[in-house]
Image 1: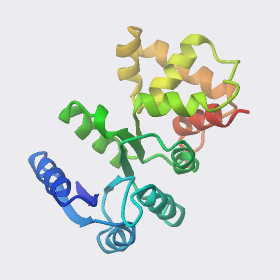
Image 2 (image 1 turned 90 degrees about the horizontal axis):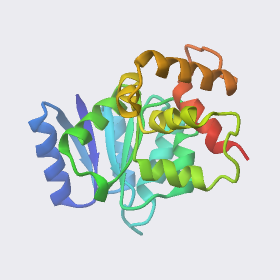
Image 3 (image 1 turned 180 degrees about the horizontal axis):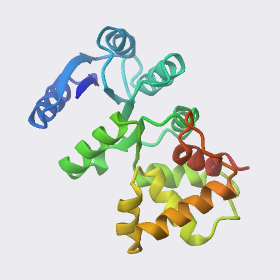
Length: 213
C-alpha cells in the first residue's frame, strides 16, 4: 500500500513512516503544509493520505480544508484525518459526498497500533473509520435523530459509522451476522436508500441521520 503522510512535525512524519514500513506499507511522499499536500498527492497518487488537521501557517484547519478540496476534485482520493479535536462542520463536509474512503480519528484516543493500521487499510479499501467520539458529536449537533429507527438499528448504524463490518458489528452486539444483515437492510429501507453501484449506502445511511433536521 502506498501512503502519503501529511504532518507538519518532522518527528511525527518519521515515526509514521517507520510504523508504516513495519506493516509492509510504503510512504511514497510526505508534506508539511496544505499546499505541499495537494502537490504531493498529484505527484504520487497514493492509495491513502494520512492528514493532520492543523497545518501551517495558522495551525488551525488547513489540513482538513485541503482534504475537502482534494475530495471535491478527486472523489476517489482516500483520506484518513488525524486530529486533536472534532471539527464538526468540516468533518460533516468531508463525509458529505458519501463515496467512502474517509476516516477521522482523534490522536489521543489511538491506543492500539493494530487498530490504527486496520483503520488505514479499511479507508484505503474505500470504507470508513470514524472515532466514536466523532460520531457522537456529529449526532449531537443535530436536533432530531431519525425516529423511525429502533434502538437496535441505531446501535448498528452507530457502529457502521465507525467503520465496522457486519461481522464486527455482530461481535460487538453479540448477535448473529444474519441479524445484523436484517437490521442493515431495514435501515436502508427506512432511509430510502436503494441499491446502487455508484453509492456507498453505508456512508449515505450515516449522512442521512446526520442531516436530518
